[in-house]
Length: 394
Image (cartoon, rainbow, N blue to C red):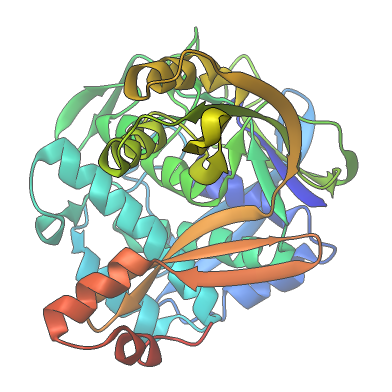
């Protein structure tokens, strides 16, 4: 399986990700020329050789109307105090960017993540969010470059290390804030992160949004046959090499261990069984279902089977005993093979609609989220088929 692994031991920022991924291409200069023809008004990408702690790599800079934006407020190349709303970003992306539609969708999905995080941090609706650190043209250039590079590299699986966020404080449009900045912390919920002795903001909001959009799992590096390695350098110098490394290579097709927990019951109502299934899914089960069976004394009964990861075993066992009448649970360990899954938000006349994508083993599938389609159908008084017919074809 074609796998991209990102080493974020010195955090992540848009320019570092761009530079690291760029080094994986056989003709990086040709790609930079392509970036400069995308249609971003007044934007110029520049690729420069850089050395950190004796390691050579690439640094990417963005010039806006001939000048690099120097009023940076992030250690890794943050962004100035220009104010742009999500609608401004959408206009630039839809009307100016000359990239495939899937890349536009990725760019807008990254900005939607940023807007949602800022909304939760500041307690205001998404429509009132104005991007300070992440709304300027140089940030849009970084996001676009990374999305186009991911499209060009087309990995089947994207993995990343736990993210080093740095320590101390960072100055932003709202004043001095702790590291990680609140928006970054919000974006990195459920992602393994850590601080350390290095004072400074190592992971920016843009970097966090890009990582959480593209990365399937944050894990230690798996066994892989590496074919290309890229070094994306940050601006500042630290005692450790300030770079993000990207490894492109082959791993075995994705397989993992799951547990099947099951029990037989013959004294529960349909409502009780339905409630138990709901609680099991809410409590971390991968799947939960029932099968009709015959039990002793010719009584009809139900086989309740639950799939979960080994890490959630205790939680699921406790839920089974709490919400069913069983006095015993069987456990089987098994392997499952899975396609790489991702979720993309597609812009529609009625607002964003989630699309579930899956690929691997030489196949690719896509499906719109039923709940989003049903919501539109109810609000617009349409049938599901009418809604589907007006969405981009899968």
